[in-house]
Amino acid sequence: MAVGVLIAERVLSAVDAAADEIVDFTSTLIRIPTVNPPGEAYEDCARVIGERLVAGRFEVDYAAAEGRPEHTPVHPRVNVVGLRRGRAERPAVHLNGHLDVVPAGEGWTMDPFSGAVNDGRIYGRGACDMKAGIAAAVYAAEAIRRAGIEINGSIEISATVDEESGGFAGVAWLAEQGRLTKERLDYVIIPEPLGVDRICVGHRGVYWFEILTYGRAAHGSMPFLGVSAIDQMSLILDRIRRELAPVLAGRTTAVPVVPDLARHPSINVNAFAGGQPIDGIQTPCVAGTCRAIFDRRFLLEEGYDATKREIETLLQRAAAEVPALKYELRDLMIVHPVRTPEDSPLIAAVGRGVEQVIGRRATQVASPGTYDHKHVERIGGIRDCVAYGPGVLELAHQPDEWCGVDDVINATKVLALTILDLTETR
Ligand SMILES: [Zn+2]
Image: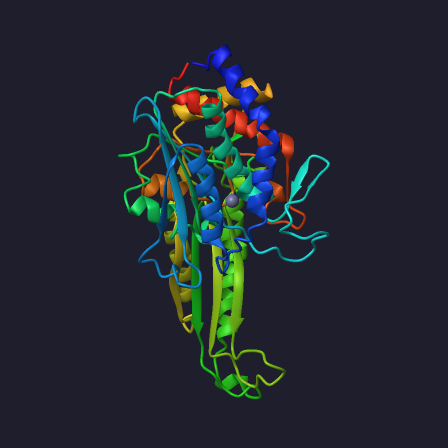
């Protein structure tokens, strides 16, 4: 059921009254260059968010990822978690954003960490991915408080590290510690930049693997004395192109992955190295080894086991035909696809919030890549998780990244209404 008109009006005007603060807070976060790799200034950023939460009557805790190898004295992995109880413990609504950003990279026409606001846009690395999302989460809770509403449940907000590099010291770690689990939480919303009228209900799977081929080194002037590992690898690449790629192009998922072309599975060669390292021109040998790294994105319907078996079968067929082919297959990273159940009350609640604030029906989408949803579901066991947040996905990781001021304000409103809706605070 939608949030009552009176209570909705109070909270929406509290968001409008805080509009300048929300924009300022986003800029403040952008000015802390939490670049990953290597993981700069995480603690500074966690503290700024934590102080804002304390001011909003949250109990705040800084959770350093003790025991994780990436948590070092130089680059500590500090997450921040704030909890504010309402009239009841449950339902517990958790909003999670990652505080790390990818490096600025080339092509900027401005300082990537200025947080400048111009013509209704907030600029900077992390503007949309996802410091605006963190600001929206924090101020959704704050607007509820300023409107004098006590909810029938609790709100927890976390800002976590390392999403851009897998989230193992961030969301995965909190879930492993029993803090981000179904025993404590009912709903998780991740305000990633999916667009203010779209609800993201999951992502595809990732199978990263490497193939090594082993030839026999020989003098480059007498290649007939050796076996080229690069030639061996090219046999495999050729089979992938001729046999596997067309099969993948013919498969489609029922999950609403965007963009449209990502509804098909894919395989890409992400890296390739064979023979001696190329330093100058002196590489006088037949390549004894070759290594390539593959990025196979798979569909929920395909599943990991069948995806891996397909690669193994392809390699076995190649080896049967070319007996000299010696290879090894090694798994590098496996991310299983996730999908929020279609009957999730969370999808319905965010949808009602979008209709009330934006005036349009929300579209359901799924991510072509992956994000922290996987850890929430697979380690935390929480089925009701979606991504919903301000900003345009295509601007993430780009030079001159920005997020619209209207988007941040609207997403803050939708998140606030969603919290009230899920906790049946009428
Ligand atoms: Zn992100």
